[in-house]
Structures are given as C-alpha cells and as structure tokens.
Length: 75
Image 1 (cartoon, rainbow, N blue to C red):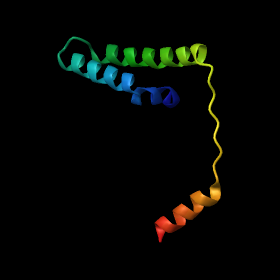
Image 2 (cartoon, one colour):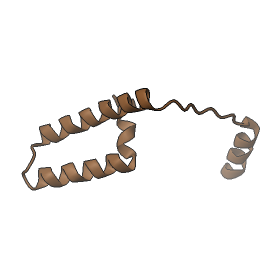
Image 3 (cartoon, rainbow, N blue to C red):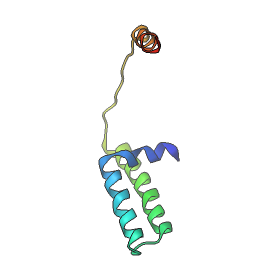
Image 4 (cartoon, one colour):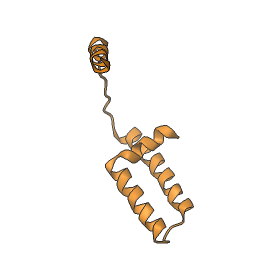
C-alpha cells in the first residue's frame, strides 16, 4: 500500500488530505470514512494513470559523479 500512498504528496493529494482533516475536525466526517476516501483516491489515481497516460520515463545516471559528490560532501 505504501506505493499507492506516494500520490498523496501530489498537489491534489495534499488538498484532499487537508480538506478531509478539516471535515473530520468539524465533525462532518468520521476518521474511518476519511480514511476510506483516501484509499479510494489511491486506487483511482493509479487506475487513471494506468489507463490514460502512455508516457514512460527512463533516465541514465553516471555513478562516478554521484560517488564523487558523496565523497566530497562527507569530507
């Protein structure tokens, strides 16, 4: 489930969480219902990205520069 929860750190996920927190605080929603909304958000965002987004990302990293940066940072 941790993989699904990464979408909660997006702008829409943060806004949803803040809104749900406010609604729970005001007594409009129960904490259990707010949690179920977040679970449904996670499932819906994964489904939408899986079916509507066709872009793939790949990247190449030069490990020498990462190692050199780390060594210089630790010194």
